Length: 337
Image (tube, rainbow, N blue to C red; front, side, top):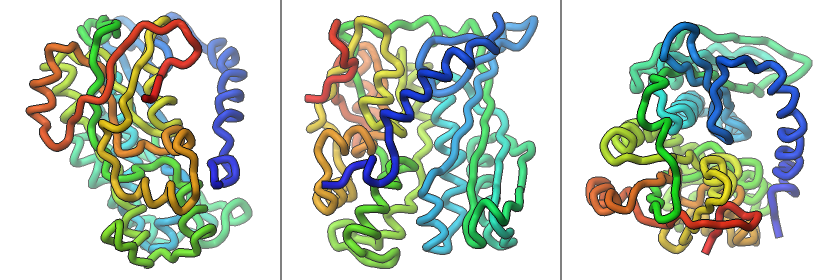
């Protein structure tokens, strides 16, 4: 049986470290720092205004190793931007500008240009400026053909936005939106199953997937920006979770207040073939799959019951009712049934 820890990623250790550094981080906060708890980015009130700056930083993880093996580099640039856009959009912010960080053992002009082309293409799609970045050469830190990639995004919203005052309550419903694959999370486990345990190659065609492993694993992370804006502005969504590292339980729990839990009906989530193939090939437990991967659901929105039919109808084929908000006093804030 394969799990994330055997692939080199210890989620529990990561969470423990975050808990220990929380107090250190809090020491830097002033009254201008705005928090709702467990969010996908940081919020800072612009002095002497009602403007909130919302910012987040992230990377693409070991999906980069798939890009390097395939010799395709623009898609990870798009991944970086789309992931970041989703993170601040679910908080209510409109993306404004982006900066990137590219580090390599040895710079390859074509690789750098392809990555930046992907970043700029995605920025343009979101009407967002790429205002700067850093390109670093680190021959003693990375192998000659390796590189790392990260980016930071900033967006803005009003402190008077009604979204900020909406409250998740028992009886609200949960609507999911399809992912198009792994997006940018769980790649250490996926790569172990595909390339180490199963000895498949980057260009191995899988009949169940209908494509090669390279093409499947390099599908670009979806941007949900337009849907998010619609849900917040027209359907009174009160919280939205971007399903990234930590899977459905880890990310849905971030948007729930104390005493409230989410009940997710997993059989209502359309699962792409890639998740079934990985689960079987790696003999991965059902629980582990949902803690590592998005499992076909890239975003979950908490909405009033009266809005469900309109949303599912409007986004037919993409949106699905998959859960509800319940009162819950036990430890688990997300219950998978």
